[in-house]
Length: 192
Image 1 (cartoon, rainbow, N blue to C red):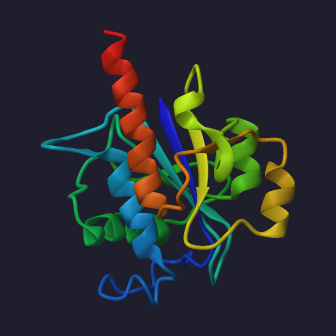
Image 2 (image 1 turned 90 degrees about the vertical axis):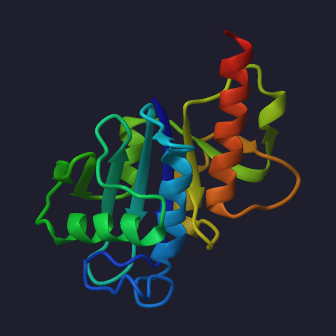
């Protein structure tokens, strides 16, 4: 399973936002929606072997994690509003520390990065890391941030993670996911 964990530093943690104002009123939820689309969409299909975790840290009720699972995902269309609508539905669902399914393939729970790091060990995507093309074996889980840098507390709990770079230029989070998946696709194709 290919996993992407994206931290949304300002992303609202309730469903009280307009799909017409995801960049502003939803705390840059548009960035996270683009990450979802990059994680799953192929031409005329979805990646069934991918998961995307959104760690929402904004107001009014941080920390919440939303999980999109490609093997059971339904009702996602390749536009930001579609992903935003599924996020709104997930956030409207009362939740605790266990994932609850809001719509097929979309789950929500309380908790954030600390909990996820007990369940998987991602590499941290960082422009100063080891070039992904120089890696003999590619990791299956990747951690990245939205349009903000990692906070001091996030840096402290991720210090032990290996750093991986997709190239010499800083890219948007959704573009970084696309580059990682392209590298995975190339390697999978060449090993057939």
